[in-house]
Image 1 (cartoon, rainbow, N blue to C red):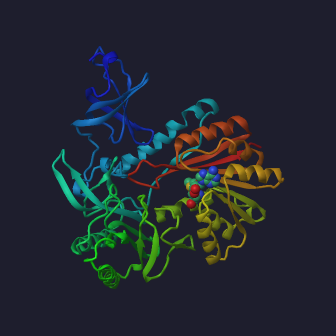
Image 2: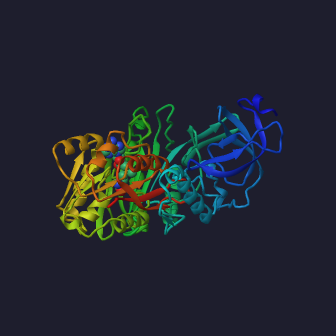
Image 3: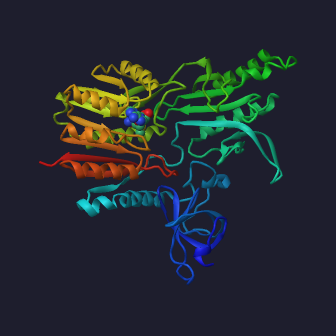
Length: 489
Ligand SMILES: C[S@@+](CC[C@H](N)C(=O)[O-])C[C@H]1O[C@@H](n2cnc3c(N)ncnc32)[C@H](O)[C@@H]1O
């Protein structure tokens, strides 16, 4: 096929996927063996494993590359592995589950190095430490949210009317059905199965998001790692009963409650159970909450501090890694003079990292976060851990910095942990104005990290002391990186 004639929906045959780029896209090139083809770059979207040979459908044709999707696998990659139920990476957020963990780490390290290419070309070599791997690889998630729904496909003759699992990727109206979910532990899975079997027996239907009607909606399970406490939340639509006078609402709800109370008697780990009376038209799980069993929060412990987790709390989804991440940030920081210093924690979320810092080292810490509900968690956690040298500012970092600098306020150490998408362009120049001896940048996106580092190195006297990637989310394409920047003396 002459490449000039390649168009949308064409099938490119026998293409070798060479590697993964931009986190999870496959990278390939049109074969050089075919004289009509010219090595043009191909990205394979949705899902790919390096060294797979596949037939690809062209989704988009751009000047510099083709965007494609796998239609058939011609030859499986030698590194591809199977797992229980052979759940494929294609079907969920565990995109890399069919890649051995050792290879996942190599790919992540390589992606970080590649993202730094421009910087090393301009500023010379960087001290990049080997990637830090996750202590738990297969069942690290402390929070999971299942959906109830149907899977109807007339095209493929599928009619499943009561499914509980996750939405089919890219097809929101369909919910798939498995008795097991990756990335959570066996107890979470066992309890999930029990709740699922019970829900099928009591004669109430799953919610239909398209029609915005019917009953069962979501099942949220949170389980702390260090303290072994579980919270369960069942979300359902109470209005389902409104036009069904023959159905006894209170009888049905009592049946469900009784089941959950029995479940909590059977499993000591269960410390908290909520109902979410959910009449919200959008697909959120938390609505009008009723605590039906015991504690209103569960408690996780990180580095000897306790954190209360409510159904709405923000909390890192991998507790064992959160502890490791925070220890690494502490290790990266020069703690010598910190007891007289002011730390600015930018993009602080619930301020967890710096609560640990405030308690142990710093004179005072100011944590800045956009989402106002995070401040409630912060306040409760600060009180619980007797941290009184920390302030939480609910603001946009870019606005906060403007005011803070105009008020001639100082900072001695900056820690920056921006969202995946970006750091506001106004924030970067302001960050440089403090001229702190050290800045610690924690990033969940190597691409924006590289862009910001390039700006910092180009516009200041900072240099990169060290940089280390961390695998906080095995089987996914996410990469965390910590960087220590120091002012050149
Ligand atoms: C990667 S998370 C920070 C995680 C946190 N440092 C921790 O360790 O738990 C990024 C945070 O930035 C917040 N955020 C996003 N845009 C912001 C802005 N313009 N100003 C302040 N916070 C923002 C998000 O709400 C989110 O909580």
